[in-house]
Length: 471
Image (cartoon, rainbow, N blue to C red):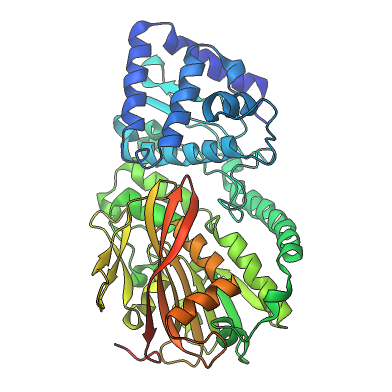
């Protein structure tokens, strides 16, 4: 938890701004620009949350900036609601922290104000350049604040550091504090401990009779062979970098560890943001339940799986006869694009590299040539995902792709492929027997999303693929 002195300092800074009409009006105009900007326009709920906490802070109503009060006043929860079971306030706060970091990573160099939400608190920090020199705030790691629930962030629950872009031009000469260099180690220790606990929870919950049905595709192809199985989690930091820079990271660049495209065209704020998030190697939050469920299936079928992060592997690792499971689309896991030649439904980046759509390269009657999502991550609208079983080119192993145009899509694909009755029904619509011989196939899913949750997942199309030959 933040110290009282830290909270008092923030309250004092807010009071300085609020005591003058000019300062308050400028702040409200800045807040309006932030909420209506590119970063927040995809989440009405996060924008409302930010507006609420800033309004309460400048009005001096700091008692209203508590989890239960926010849940009641902003989200309409009852006075007796269980904050342990209903994490809507913590989830939204975590999303707001991330969006603020993205906003100032893009526009902070020209911004008079900087708003942040320190971990462990719902009292915002509001800094104004005109009120004195602004220094780079320290990163706060708060194990007491669980942040988002498991479905949003389980492998990466520590909020990213809040940075102050006004200090960026001085970074070349400034010496970083020793504590900042220790943060990756602390993150690693904390995440390892958390994951051990999560594995135990999911392992016990995931084991049920359906898990033993290794005769069902695609699991019969993965667990029914003598080959080892490796699950590769996504790399959401790479997706964020592409969103900030507006430039794609190709699989070639990714394989060669060139993670920041066009570095010579970035502003100091953008460069610092990219380098900051690359210090960690986090997986998307939606990956954790999928990993746990697949691990339970593997254990039940007397198989083991190796779980690795996308950024930790090299191209040579894929040149083996192992079976692979990839989570995420090419934007969050560039390795997935290696299998594009086998797919009819291919992810493509929009021109600004900040979103993806799915192109149908071989449309059949009643199918569309492209499927464009209307909902960004944590937004409300339509999205798409694929489930595909293909061959590993020039190898004898199988590859399962679970990929969404946003995180909710990947989550939906993971849920469907581990729901044996539903999966069997959908495969039968494709003309594939779930208990028959190995068939390579591709499913296109449509889903509705609302505030980070996938709903109404439907099968749009299904293609039976040739046996892994280049097409």
